[in-house]
Length: 255
Image (cartoon, rainbow, N blue to C red; front, side):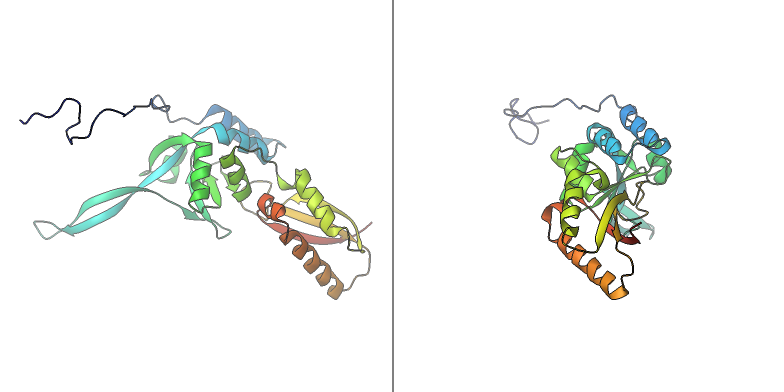
């Protein structure tokens, strides 16, 4: 056996300058983060909104699934096709609204329910959000197929990644002010209200619905003009685009 310098590793790379960091997840049991689980269950059973789940997710330990994909295959000694190598990779999924989504899990149990062959890699929610945004994923789907399923949309992910607070658009004062300004010069508008169009956080609707109360007896042509004018106005607001993932519009007669 050949000897090598005690100040280098077996490949001849010096030990000097290296540092070893403690694994913060070394004692992980694979169970859900209690604060995140509490926020999810309260959201499902009460009137709490998504912002509390978003806040809990940012600091929680979550699990990233790694899936084995075939790297190389070839013919074995007896003529059978055999796998020569396999790679573990992070997967993304196509969401119902045709966006790229990253599946993430609260626990080993919920991950195994989704795919028994997936291997869990623990990390914190903020790092996951940053990775998702960096890779062009506009959705993070937490616990897909489980009772605790919850979808994070682009604005929430960007806020988590940057360490900012986030609130649902219909309660966000900036969003309310932008909509108010966009409608201010339309004479037929009497009032408006903002609604959470996806209260279950499962991509069952737009993120925000704007309900506009109008003067009576407007014809279809004028309604179309009002819709076009409003949508053009909010689309030019960079801040609105940052804060709102998608918007729906409804006209109702003012009472």
